[in-house]
Length: 167
Length: 252
Image (tube, rainbow over all chains, first blue to last red; front, side):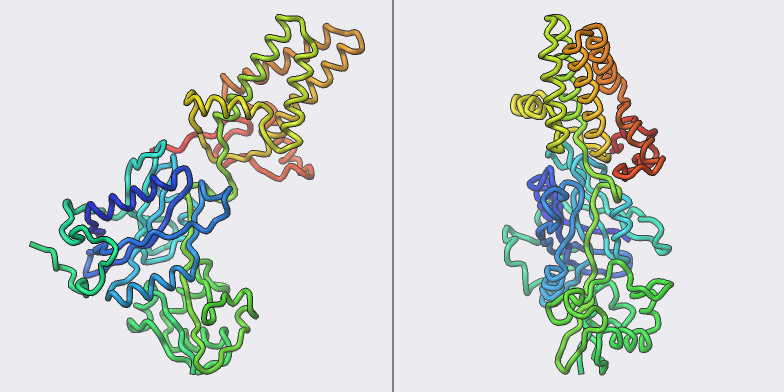
């Protein structure tokens, strides 16, 4: 499985991670999936609802936020394909805690933030045996092919067409 | 009839549907009805012992069933049972917390410098003051010389070095140092300055071993008490770390 993401979206995820440093920031990735290809279409930064002293090394998204995000994805003809979160001063690899809470099927994009600067982003997914997480490919599309400067109201035009910005 | 809302990761097990209608009268019955109709869904919802998987949250309409009657929560016509994935995680292994080792280093450096100054100036009162600062810090659950670290941070001479660790052994270690210095103060009062300075030098030596050698002797004592099962010493050493050794930083 490869997660395709635009440079604009990845940059937004990394900026979100930097703005939450030294705490962990998190959110959901909306998109679609066909064959061995996942395409991120929208990113949805959400509050980390862990208590203040814990947010430096833990994150949790309110299930009702997840529900609202699913409704939003349904309305856009998309799915929640994954989760992004940051690891302040830790590598962009899943921890035991990430593994413990990992939901099968989702892609988990982890951004390592070092001294306030996004350092690296990698994508992982729970393997079939559920005993570990396997790294997946992350393919970053350059430019802002789709967003055309309007990141707040994506909607309607998206539909289900995974190839709309293809050559 | 009620409806069960199925999250994206589980839709493949219910023929791609986002909602399934059920005729059950409770949450538990609705889940049973669902897995009987879609057997492939069972291992996704339940573990081998029949317990709900840890990443599953159940809501009836917009209320968590844990705040209602759990899986016995009744369902009435038109209710929506939401199966919602629990989205959580984080950098630190379970059980451990982030401990800023540069704050600890600033504390050790302050203790060493102040005690050396006390010895050079022949000022037992200063050594007793260091002990009192450490004692007050320990009682407050903090690092005694934390303000020094704040100043260093403000001057950008120090940055956090957060490692997965237990804060309790470090607090215990500081308390142990404070008790030794209090013993030294008592020796001075009792007219035994040789013993007093000996105890001051013991604290200097152990703080130096910690600062320069990365070994916290007080933490090792704490973990030893933990192994003996002494009440109040509930934390075990971080996995893979020798008791008292500074935990390894995560590799990028």
